[in-house]
Length: 252
Image (cartoon, rainbow, N blue to C red; front, side):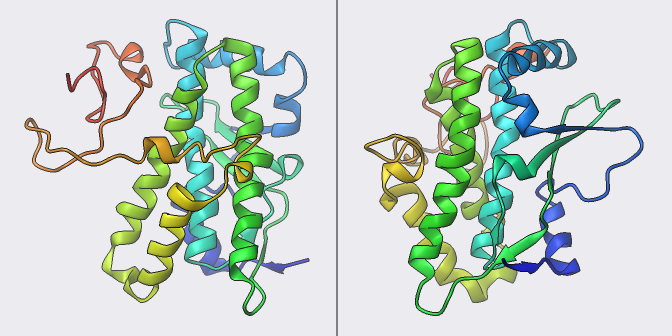
């Protein structure tokens, strides 16, 4: 059954676009409705106009990049809060502001509860969470985007992967999480390198692992970055063809 999330836990998750009390201008879209035959195609066409994307592949990619925060939100709950959220598609909705020019959707959970691991059973519990987030949820979203736009699934999976890396390598590197350092490192290593492919979908191999590469020095900025293996098409939505710092096209 799980226990209701505490106010402090909810507050921590809001930084990763957890929706709570929708505003009067919010548009609430249950994921179940989005996945009804034909609805994803209509949604992607509408998003294409909103973000000034030239075609459906670009808008599908931008949708997947925003969806990376769903993985971040749920993995933060797992690693830091020690809570398994109810990530079932039928219990999650997108919250979108009608006048939001940037298009940064939030995620609303109909059941604001979390299940903690039983003593000595955390590894089994972690597998259940990874499967629920990826195989049972994100994989379904990616397959729907691919079906409607024929965009490369590699692009979509890397759009998710980069935010997993960002969470564990940047956000959770903050000294305030020092007391959970061992768990953070263990969870991250497991998710990106050791977790079996079937936890992410009908895969023989972990789809995240291929994107977990080294961080070569990039000369036009001061820090090291991990160059993407695919281009997310972000530059096609900007007036000046601005590229991400990690864009493979920009790094040749």
